[in-house]
Length: 151
Image (cartoon, rainbow, N blue to C red; front, top):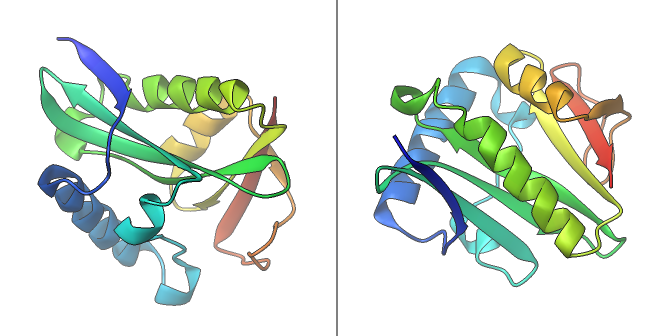
């Protein structure tokens, strides 16, 4: 049961399937104004490091680190196929994101997540992320939690 996390292009049919699954999941939890997802075109920009998780060759997860002009970066589009949960893919992707942030000389990694996702919040806390105030471009939202890991 090997899991591999690598930088890959986001525009792949299996990634689009994961994005659709993620969109549907988020829409089931939050109203549209509280969903802050980015599209494939955004993930293809040069300031984005896009990671793909493969289990036995099959794409089962993805995440992106989006570098900002202020020396920080934001995690976007982190999602694991529900059929692959329990394989510690989220933990492995977090390690890849943090390693990439260090490699790029990022001062802090930030994220926005929803309050109705205890598994994600637990993953981020275990990785050392702490709650912070909303950061640009976000506004405070009672359904959102903002977190940061200083590197």
